[in-house]
Image 1: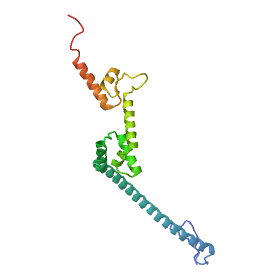
Image 2: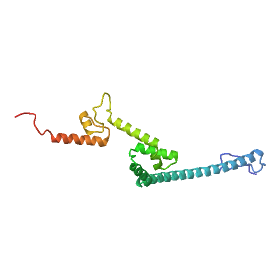
Image 3: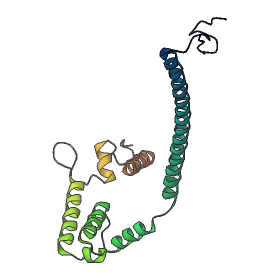
Image 4: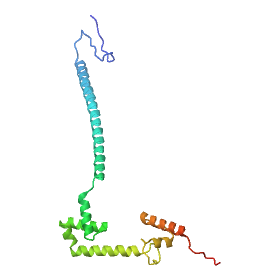
Length: 195
């Protein structure tokens, strides 16, 4: 009879047992371990495959949600908000023209759960709007920096020309530059020298 020797390094991974001897408990346990390892390996491979598929799905969902957000933002920026436009138009017709004042009225209407026309008619809102208007008027008349003002408002073109600087407001700065150019082009109509 031929004796087979057990080798752990056989090419196909099989455990070869002596055919003449009965399998011992250790050999049976080795076979069970081999089967268990095989099952665990297959489960691990399956889990890896599922994890890759899940990652791909998550990436595609993330890309789709980014595209949806972009499309929504684009459509919102392209569309006119008629409700907001109607509210602003109504408030302007009631004499509430400044955006801060409009916000005060809208916030109060939400807080009290009343309509805008009811809120605009309330005495405490009228007083608050008048106080804000007075504060803006007085603030516009004050000179920036130290010292006293020249008596002209800071939103006046002549104020900035005399100061020799440009204001932070782009629209007003453009007016100041245009006025300076016009003044330089017109020059003096009469000469300082006498003939």
